[in-house]
Length: 334
Ligand SMILES: [Zn+2]
Ligand SMILES: [Zn+2]
Ligand SMILES: [Zn+2]
Ligand SMILES: [Zn+2]
Ligand SMILES: [Zn+2]
Image (cartoon, rainbow, N blue to C red; front, side):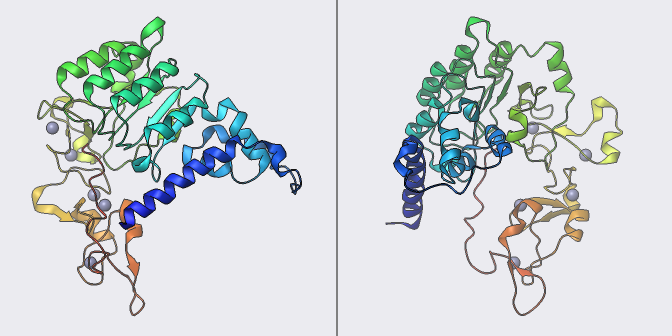
């Protein structure tokens, strides 16, 4: 059995166990008295946790398990990210979403490759009031499947507010226009959203977005440079920000090389490589600590992958240690 298979099995069993634990009656452990109930604030925090943390909390004690098990509020925003995302089966997702009892408001599936159009449709049929649907990097979905889901979520005067679909393959301008018509992207709120800048080096925090009132619209648009439907970024460099709107530095990551550290555009003659294959501008490259052997830095996001060297200060990158170059899978094509 491959290591990844074993890992998958363990994780699958862990999720199943958590799900089973949640359905065990509290009376089964009456002989084992609890030391005291958790602080009330902890129960309030449950509604703000991603699924993995929520399942872990359900194993801490009986009262938390009961709270997670019975409190629908804990499940109205469902966020599945690392480490569950790549192994999450539709079967388990169905069980998890059923906890919301039809009241699901946010469904965020980040890089959940196993989710198919059919699975998404089933969840949406049972949860017709979803307001925020985030499925970036869910490569098992197609634009047609997403349109069908959004169509369903637009029935009975319900409006989907926010949709994230970067990393879904083959989205055309027609698909985008179709989706925009459902999300009413020409409303005044949408025009405000359009002015919000997306920066390459900033990670999207789905926990925050799920609880943010103003988050509206679709994350992809038509790149002004290549005319394709892509994620479009604004430049953080002061000189670029001062340009007139028509000449502003905006584009997808295929059209403009963006620095993974500062989010600025990078000129070809000052482009540097990070160990993790991310692009860096010369200024950022100079400031980052380098591997003792290859003299390359990690970007901030991947900085934890190097190992401290026992003989000398600094670190040795995982590539020089010969561990694996496969650690850097392509997250998703933004
Ligand atoms: Zn482009
Ligand atoms: Zn930079
Ligand atoms: Zn620029
Ligand atoms: Zn190295
Ligand atoms: Zn990196």
